[in-house]
Image (cartoon, rainbow, N blue to C red; front, side):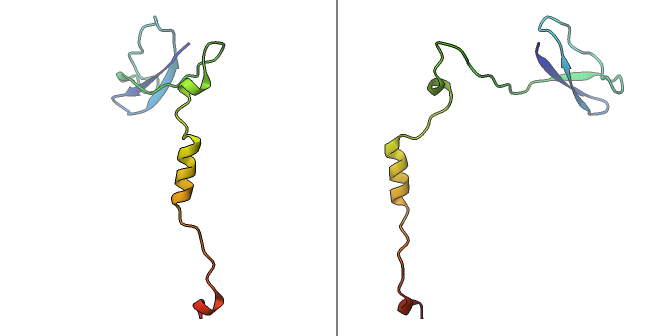
Length: 86
Protein backbone atom coordinates (compact mmCIF):
# COMPACT_ATOMS: atom_id res chain seq x y z
CA UNK A 1 0.00 0.00 0.00
CA UNK A 2 1.53 3.36 -1.03
CA UNK A 3 2.31 6.19 1.34
CA UNK A 4 1.20 9.64 0.17
CA UNK A 5 2.50 12.94 1.50
CA UNK A 6 0.33 15.98 2.07
CA UNK A 7 1.06 19.56 3.12
CA UNK A 8 -1.46 21.82 4.81
CA UNK A 9 -2.07 25.22 3.23
CA UNK A 10 -3.15 26.72 6.57
CA UNK A 11 -0.64 25.47 9.17
CA UNK A 12 2.13 24.31 6.80
CA UNK A 13 2.56 20.90 8.43
CA UNK A 14 3.42 17.90 6.31
CA UNK A 15 2.09 14.44 7.02
CA UNK A 16 1.92 11.02 5.42
CA UNK A 17 -1.11 8.83 4.83
CA UNK A 18 -1.00 5.15 3.86
CA UNK A 19 -3.83 4.59 1.42
CA UNK A 20 -4.69 2.48 -1.59
CA UNK A 21 -4.22 3.75 -5.13
CA UNK A 22 -7.99 3.85 -5.72
CA UNK A 23 -8.79 5.61 -2.41
CA UNK A 24 -9.91 9.24 -2.51
CA UNK A 25 -7.27 11.89 -1.74
CA UNK A 26 -7.20 13.47 1.70
CA UNK A 27 -9.02 16.82 1.63
CA UNK A 28 -8.24 18.29 5.07
CA UNK A 29 -5.31 18.51 7.45
CA UNK A 30 -5.38 16.03 10.30
CA UNK A 31 -4.00 18.71 12.67
CA UNK A 32 -6.02 21.88 11.94
CA UNK A 33 -8.65 20.72 9.40
CA UNK A 34 -7.30 23.17 6.77
CA UNK A 35 -7.13 22.29 3.08
CA UNK A 36 -4.15 20.23 1.88
CA UNK A 37 -2.09 19.69 -1.26
CA UNK A 38 -0.80 16.29 -2.30
CA UNK A 39 2.98 16.36 -2.64
CA UNK A 40 4.92 14.60 -5.35
CA UNK A 41 8.07 13.02 -4.03
CA UNK A 42 10.75 10.70 -5.33
CA UNK A 43 10.38 7.05 -4.67
CA UNK A 44 12.90 4.26 -4.91
CA UNK A 45 12.61 0.60 -5.67
CA UNK A 46 14.87 -2.34 -6.23
CA UNK A 47 14.33 -5.01 -8.84
CA UNK A 48 14.73 -8.48 -7.36
CA UNK A 49 14.29 -12.00 -8.59
CA UNK A 50 15.45 -13.94 -11.58
CA UNK A 51 15.77 -12.06 -14.83
CA UNK A 52 17.11 -8.82 -13.34
CA UNK A 53 20.80 -8.09 -13.30
CA UNK A 54 22.31 -5.91 -10.59
CA UNK A 55 24.67 -4.35 -13.12
CA UNK A 56 21.77 -3.17 -15.32
CA UNK A 57 20.21 -0.81 -12.79
CA UNK A 58 22.80 -0.31 -10.05
CA UNK A 59 24.64 2.54 -11.73
CA UNK A 60 27.82 2.54 -13.72
CA UNK A 61 31.07 1.68 -11.99
CA UNK A 62 34.37 2.80 -13.53
CA UNK A 63 36.15 0.12 -15.49
CA UNK A 64 39.50 -1.22 -14.33
CA UNK A 65 41.33 0.89 -16.94
CA UNK A 66 39.61 4.13 -15.84
CA UNK A 67 40.41 3.59 -12.18
CA UNK A 68 44.08 2.88 -13.04
CA UNK A 69 44.29 6.08 -15.12
CA UNK A 70 42.92 8.18 -12.25
CA UNK A 71 45.47 6.83 -9.77
CA UNK A 72 48.36 7.17 -12.23
CA UNK A 73 47.55 10.86 -12.87
CA UNK A 74 48.07 11.67 -9.19
CA UNK A 75 51.73 12.58 -8.66
CA UNK A 76 53.59 10.27 -6.38
CA UNK A 77 55.18 11.67 -3.26
CA UNK A 78 58.91 11.76 -3.48
CA UNK A 79 61.10 11.79 -0.49
CA UNK A 80 63.13 14.91 -0.12
CA UNK A 81 66.50 14.57 1.42
CA UNK A 82 67.09 16.03 4.82
CA UNK A 83 69.66 18.38 3.33
CA UNK A 84 67.07 20.00 1.03
CA UNK A 85 64.75 20.75 3.97
CA UNK A 86 67.45 22.68 5.89
